[in-house]
Amino acid sequence: MPRLTDKIAVITGGGQGIGRAIALAYSREGAVVVLASRNEEKLHETRLMIEKDGGAALVLPTDVRDAEQVQALVKTIINTYGRIDILVCNAGIAGPTAPLWEISPQQWEETLSTNLTGPYLLCAAALPAMVEHKEGNIIFIGSGIGKKPLPGRTPYAASKLGLVGLARTLAHDAGPYNIRVNVISPGPTDGERLQKVFEKQAAIRNVSVEAVRAMATRDSAMKRFVVAEDVANAAVFLASDEARYISNVDLDVSAGL
Image (tube, rainbow, N blue to C red; front, side, top):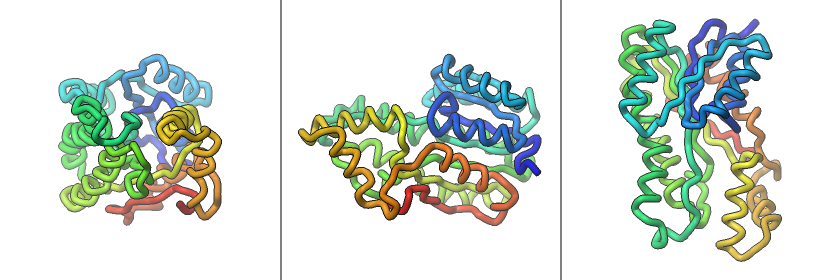
């Protein structure tokens, strides 16, 4: 039996990678999916994949860094469906790859505003409706990099570890209203985005891309990369009634990193 039947699930960054995998998994479990990000073309690709599989999806292009756009996103969803059951804050950017002292304030702010302020804006906009309905589920997509140092990635690491602090406190603020808040922290997740990160890492370390890829799995128990579907499976579980007593958790999906 589908685990998310008729749930209204909002997924930011739903046009590719982990966000797309979560959107497809949620749809297969019966949810109505709302896709939001800046890349409208990619969002429509995901929507078509969902509809081809018999699901339903709504595309609402949104810049999560913009408070007015986020408020408009939530207003449209509430006007259309009457509620938000699940909010997955997945939209994020890799940020610059350089020593901290070579990173500009603009690069720092862009990374933090997308990866940390964006989730704050989304929660601030969506929570009043969740509080009113006395039900809700918020999932932040963090990163193992927030907890395991990676040279040259300070803005990204700070933003992703910041999500853990945000979730831990928000879980207590929202818990009395039957709203759960959790984080999923993936390990290195294979795909186009990770490959670009490896290329930048190789350049600043003056080693080959293959060497960087090998280092990325060296410290994991299973010696392999995560795939987006692994993260999506965890997101389905945390959004389902099977996890109804799970909140304030930072779940590593990292092959034992």
